[in-house]
Image (tube, rainbow, N blue to C red):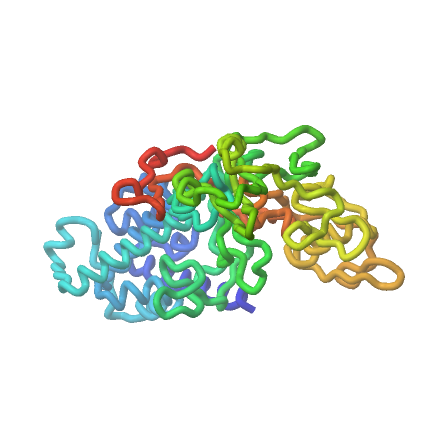
Length: 476
């Protein structure tokens, strides 16, 4: 239905341009030919005709197009705010109306000094402010949507690679900007209105997934921002933003054995800054909590019963070696879930209710789906891929007495339409990641984390609240 409405609106706008081109002494058909139409428009407003080259440059082309377009209607004397707004919002109404109005005439090259002297027009102070605010909002929205966006790290799932309070710049260009799928939204709000709450977007218009060309494909171990795949009650581009490390690319086979990650059968990259859990038992006096705070070690659990102190700490191996040497420590061990351990907090995707049990330290091998890859459907594969087939790829999926049905057609295999990724946090026992909810589809990818431009330590004092050594630090 929306495609029909869009087609009718487009035809109306082009018809209006056809009429206005004829009023300007040109052929009406020139208005509807892509690029050439803008070449002619540049002539009609007095802009250099080579400007049409910029129409091939993403983002820049939007500014060039609207400069030509708004100066074009100005050439017909349409310079008031409501006329500019109507020409942008409802061109299919006002352009044919102006084209049919005998009082509307082509006045000349609207960008030239001669035109401005012959047809002077002074904007009110309110109009000047309105134009400035609208331009700034549009420009910032385009930069945020298609070029680069700022994010803040709210949780410790990437410690110590990324710290709580790190402010990042995330590039949309590296992997290719994603065309907004829910374009009707309040500027600068993600999914919730500031102050008042409620939805900051409308689903009146929905755009199918499309990604513009980028500079690179996602590489293994890139730090990636993506929309949370489990949050299916919101549109894809309005779901919460998560940041993790991509450890599995489309077609990879990923597994974990006793907390050691393997990709395609080979040990995966392990950063010295990776964190995991350690269980520490101490003398009755316990650990020095101020000392732990000074080291910025996250304390997950404390139990100081009479005669014994019990702690669960998130640390790097280097930090663990330091804590282990403290005099009050009686026993010290890394917490590693054993195979088949399905205790609360350990159970991992796909959360089998019977049969094989996977957990955060032992899972797989699991094949990450690639576009065009075909999986055989059986009792072992269906729990792994059913959600991707049904939710992410938009099919109906049923298990009946005589087999599996996809879109009411019996099937013994499925060929994927998208690429998928396996994402994990560097803080391996304090990260909600693919081990908990599975694959990340390509249409959920937002961008690549580039560098921290600011880092704020809530536990610091005065100038030490700023982590100066992390400012403009690249993300690896």
